Length: 338
Image (tube, rainbow, N blue to C red):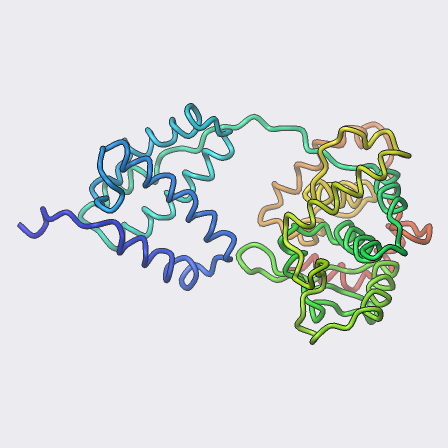
């Protein structure tokens, strides 16, 4: 009799988000928010599909059939791409994996949900900037303007590190070690920490930038907006796109380009690769979980198959990137062993 009593989804959802994801899985706040948004959509769809209020949702409604209907709705009615569909499915799979231990009597149904395959998505061409285009963007910045120096340092650091935009947002002053060999400590996905070498030019820019600011403490955010609030992802995206538009006046190849902070990440990877840096080093530099992700950059640059590896120059002095990396070989070797 007890087994037939239907149980509300709510307490399981609350425990999933308040305990399982942040405490047991150690996921970042941004990942937790992405899961939250996916499950909100799924539960709203399920409630509407079964014609009752969301407050009445029960575990028995979390079925493979409902999940498949939700995924179809995601692509057809909502018009989302396959990539978005797969992200929604990944969040639901994580939730049902949690439910297996909490509701073993329905483990079979949860297992059916977990075996729903991801849909193969067409791979778009990964965009990146040429060295001359990166230089044009930086050159177009008026460093004497109020926000000019900050933007110049921000984009230089973004290019040097190839960091994800949220990783740049999360940087604090004490994330930097500016004594030789200069290094920035980045906290990436899954709160994994990596140490990325700073080129001498970048370290000098950062020292000058910090000398002109009056931070409250070393734990203060590295980059602030005009109101003194830490820059967010959309703020950095806006800065980059504004600077690209300005640079496009003198660099026609930048016109009508959709360039995001992630484009800068691809740019760093491609330039390191073209400079002859080993793939395993690039993997650790960018914080890739799998080497197969890094291999994608090899496929992009088809020119590498018909010409010698190109050289990439760091911004500022005309220093060859390969020799720059050689001077910090101790840091690179350590990264390679991580």
